[in-house]
Length: 453
Image (cartoon, rainbow, N blue to C red; front, side, top):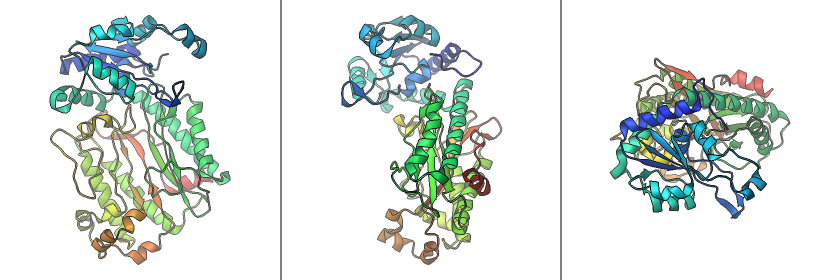
């Protein structure tokens, strides 16, 4: 069952994580893995995915299990497989074997949870059955009462240890192969679904799953488009946002945009290079101590300057950003934390993404920023600027009136063959700078064209 990929044994890595939590929080914590949710009747369930906080400290994707953390010690609660489960699902490791692999100090049946849950605090899981059990036996953490616990877990999970980084590297390598397969398939594919299938085949073939619902679309202006029925036609761009997740739950997240014909048109190339310039500027500036918000604003400024050079925006870049004119074409933030979740720890809301004392802006150009913290060594973040022509934004009468002097609408119409472009990489912050974990997948337009051809 082992899922460790570094030279350090899994149990040793997990003990270190638990000890570091104990140094910051001195009360017992109870974490559940969760259980599958039914699709339409109890025996037909959605694919199971263990809770990420459980995975961080327990390491193994167990179903219907829990761990109690206290003073750096771990007690595992899980039941042995029943004869019926063994009949349908085959043999599985016993409780003691699982406990040994994760370095648990004790292993008990689930029925013992009721005797061990007193005075514990927990973090909620997503499935309703487990959450109801949590509420009966423990107390769900709340920011007002348990901020110390939440901040301790955020700090631990935000700066990755060697095993976590090795896992993310594995996921990134498989994602790179998947994107190359998608590009190679495009010339012979008829629909988005065929390209998606080629990409996800690579991920599944490596024993991994998708870290999120894949986005493979000719309608790149739909930011989270999860429909795959559109036909592929020469002259269009295909945007693919696809990432693998390892068996232990560690994610990757890559986006590339490529021409279906194998060659960008002149207008597509112009806008692609503007987005790439923003992407490259942010990566060049990423290092410890830099505010992630400043990377976002750097992307905005680079995009605004590029769009002004193309005649789409009218004005000085800083003035355009002050008025949020760039957000007509780049409404989201430049990226997010990456780890055990693709948007890491967003189950904790902005307590993870935003440094203490910071709040989301209500500005059009900043409201969707997912991360507002100074960068630290061993963080992994995404850098993903984009350009989108979203009808709901560009055709909104109030916005058209507000920006009538800042957007050259006639010039913009000349770029009608670009619905959406996004370029996204996974970036590890090092002690002195950063390393792009997904750099083996090219971003330069000529190299992207070559992969398609």
